[in-house]
Image 1 (cartoon, rainbow, N blue to C red):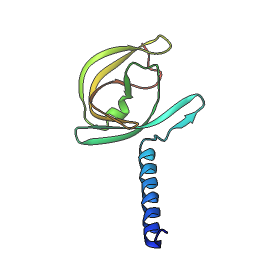
Image 2: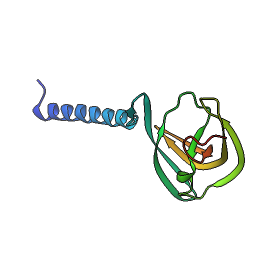
Image 3: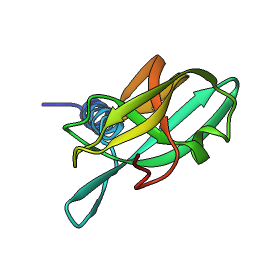
Length: 125
């Protein structure tokens, strides 16, 4: 026979274990928004002591991270060099390569991430 107090203790431990597991699983989930056929994810940029929260398009075919100049202007970042990038439609756009101290995407943190700053949507040469 299990004593009532021992049984309560075992049930309490089991519930705590389940809660801890749920917390871990929740911490690994990213709240996404689906808009038509696009996946929008939350992201955070940190540089020079300032932090910016933003939502970005998750582009599985992208070879780089790009941010709009309006977001980059919120915090001071080192502008490394002028550059060019080819976008999905084949057009070439002007970019500025910048280094962001920390980029938080999903459950990941990138330190000193090279990022391409672009002027605005649809800005082509």
